[in-house]
Image (cartoon, rainbow, N blue to C red; front, side):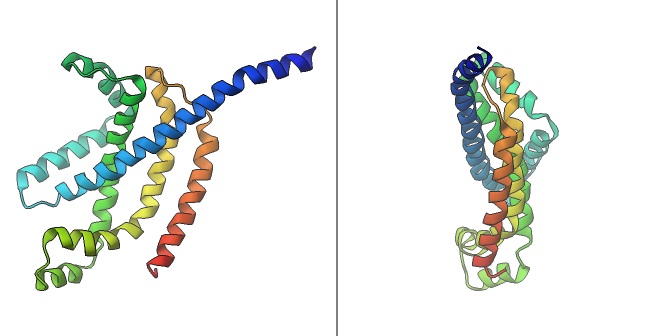
Length: 199
């Protein structure tokens, strides 16, 4: 009787675990994708010659980094409706995670960009390359490899932070079982990138 009850319980709880695991993967994946793109935009915006924009972006990044993720989740989900923006808990969670980690990734990108030797910038200017081509063809390809480790660390951090979405009703579970393999994959990818770049 006890054995049958355990199996009945397992069959009842397994679909919930799978659904929660899918939520974890989607939350981390989509949130990270937002952070990767927006983080690069924020990093580049801090390097524009227009000082007011640089100041505003820099202060916004510092503000996001200085406030807890759970507070940002609450803000996106509960304050948005006050301005007519109603989001599902899942969508609000993705946006909050993306915004939060974009601030951190912008600093990772910034460090990678600043690590590019000044001679590369001078050579681009000597060749009369546009700012766009300088970044896309010369600077960013050199800045990304040393940034992979930091980017990977924040990917693992996202897996550990997705349980916070439960405060607005998003089911999430077994993040540790996902974050550990993710950390291993990040290390493998970092080694692959470094080999390709001859580092």
